[in-house]
Length: 257
Ligand SMILES: Nc1ncnc2c1ncn2[C@@H]1O[C@H](COP(=O)(O)OP(=O)(O)OP(=O)(O)O)[C@@H](O)[C@H]1O
Ligand SMILES: [Mg+2]
View 1: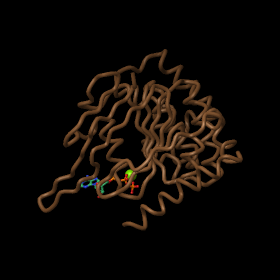
View 2: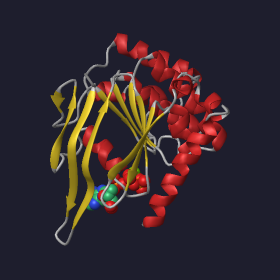
View 3: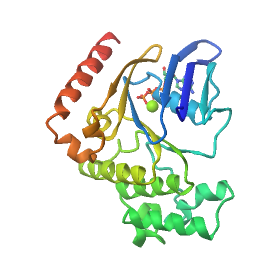
View 4: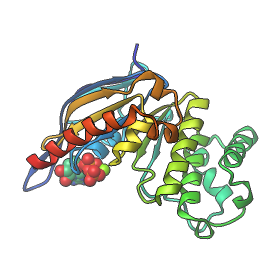
């Protein structure tokens, strides 16, 4: 049975003057441990879908389940990481990585050690007593990732987590995040505008069309590429063909707007 199901989901935003149907009739199934990316034009509802899955929004119609349980509110098994790192500037890196645990009232010695271990894995141990402004953008994103992973979520929702980073840092982080998620057997959904990133990191890539947001097509990445590190996928001979098909499909979608 799938770990996450989205069943005939529709979501509209209502204001006094208008109704925006952000998503229409979305159905999908995600297996445990799967890495799935969402690609699509701006405004096609990617962030809305992550917010619905996170339980931050209630769908207009349809249902989302995790392990057969309907999501009605934020769920402790879900970790959310945004485009901006949202570290608290007045708290040290160590205090920042405990934040999620504190909110969930699960900050104990065991979890502290676990969080510090993750910080070490991200090569950030020496930043422990520093403040966010003393770190580079890439370092801060790594801290944000540690904070998200520290609560041990089964499902990670990543909304353009690398988009503000320089290319080199982004490629390094792709590898690091990929390795960390595989080691900890996490299920992940990644929103990105970078086709290469989606192909390099994912098991499947979902392409959305806009107005209203719908799933246009699904690409299953060949298994031999799924197993490879993202950096190596980008250099594999089979990479370009998949990149090209998705590129053309997205181009057609944007021409329609
Ligand atoms: N809080 C809101 N109130 C009203 N409309 C909203 C709200 N949030 C999003 N929308 C609308 O819903 C649609 C989908 O927005 P969403 O942010 O989910 O798109 P997206 O695919 O994440 O776009 P981007 O790639 O630019 O981040 C858009 O038309 C947007 O204007
Ligand atoms: Mg968005």
